[in-house]
Length: 346
Image (cartoon, helix red, strand yellow):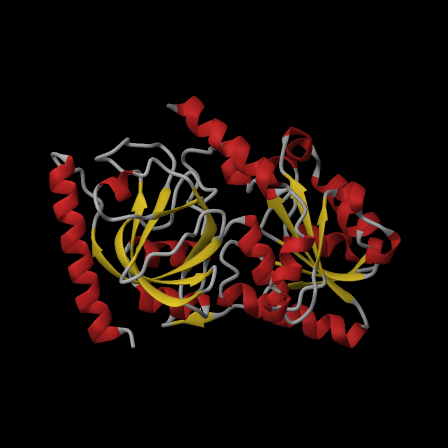
């Protein structure tokens, strides 16, 4: 079982570091500017030097992250600098413990688009591997922040660590600021509903299907996106055809059956029922799956990219005793979704 999951993780990392310029071009209407994705230090060029920089996972690009990025833009503007974000792929916790790491709120693709929408100029995506893991904090500072990006202004959270043995942190940067000629500042804090916004808090809200709180923390409704691929056609055989969407995740931040809105491939806020989980009745997969049944329409979606926005949880995922029971359960889900959508989603 562990081998299968680790294989999925490796495939995911390979996909995530493919070229992204075309992705940004597709979505440039939603972005404040066209952001340049730099895949690895070897792709840094002289034009990238002279930046206001922040470093982190930025999973979810939630309102806390947005506050940091706003601060970064303002400071960069005053200094005539470009803005840069350094992130890692896979995330360190995924590298060390792929099966136990927190579920992703966003894939790298989704994160890239969200950061572009925040007006970031450069995203430096570093592959987290044994070489990066073994690098000392001093080497990381010199290689990426000083020599690579020539950072003049650095924003870093007091809970973020970098370098071998996690020796690098905010205080580490402060102690070396005069030597390298940069200014360093702590990340500003953003609170929502009386507590600090964090990726952990977003995940907790999604796990509890508290979409009102998740929206408040993210600044927008939560969605999953991906390309529709061919599945086992089981839904069609049962009379409920579904679009199977690649999640590029081992685990999803939520699971169960939901009333959703679907956008993309010519669809605009189409209503549907989505199942997120491991399909226990059919094959009990180790990888998270997203299947969406569109209500009141049939569209060929293979190969197309969809965005699925989650509105309301109908029930937990469950294993039915037979395919006949599964078919009946789906019929009940559809009716419950239609009723909820008719009353709540105009």
